[in-house]
Length: 225
Image (cartoon, rainbow, N blue to C red; front, side, top):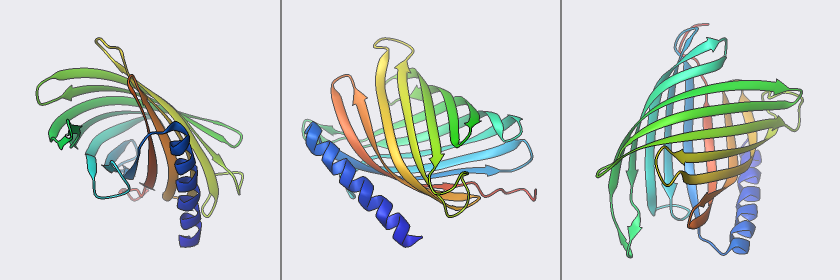
């Protein structure tokens, strides 16, 4: 598994370097953990940590911790969730690092569809953002697709491709916040764990920036079913 993941990271880093050079912009790295753990037949606990850097490592851009409780409207699908996020940001302002803290409440709905090999997911999220000097509301819509490569299904020890597009819209003006386009290669470790290495391009009104992303996904259930 180590050899496979090393190849994934090398491939994504190479693609990201080429894209970054072509766009003449800087590149960052995001290291991410996502947990979605069943606590009963209907309830799940969402938990995630994202460590985002301006460079490969060490120059912190943002630390994001998110958690929430979800409820399946139908079995393993059509999930509604209420969550909370803590975000520590350290942006550069006039060449100097500043520190901002944000508390965030969010509500989301996720629905999944399957067409042959194609595993499609839609996520709708509304955020109430309590910034240090402001309050803002934002809507996000993400459409994502996982496609197994080496097997017909997302089974253990299989490689897969992952892509998504997510748009962020403010409730007030200016409406457009950002858009994220992502592509990655992943490896299914077992039925409850997988890893991904990918490249994401984030488009804002006055900025276009690339990010290398490495993610680990944990779906180990806490209930006995």
